[in-house]
Image (cartoon, rainbow, N blue to C red; front, side, top):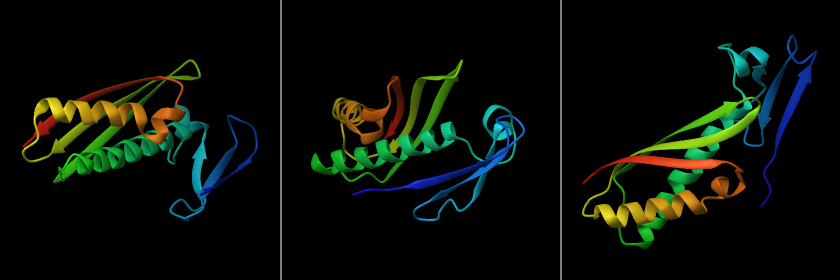
Length: 137
């Protein structure tokens, strides 16, 4: 399987701007710029997209792993916070809220650690990955 996205940029790094389009067209000429990346401008940025990819990948991996253990999550919600310092991603922090009936805290923590270490995006990131969670049963 191969997936692709396209970035187009015009102008200088600070004054220019560009757009991103994904294969699925969920992003279709979506604006990005210096302002949307390093300030609070309108548009997306690469770090936000990495956070979305990590949250999505991790949450799906959790669902598969829970299912393999005989649990069906009622709800899994993951927020990913990418920490960019001096031009380098130094941490990806996952904040998980889960509703999973009849699972022990120990089993949930085991599944969570497995997902943290083995989701595809975790494997590709060369940074510290931390997780905190709230489990409701």
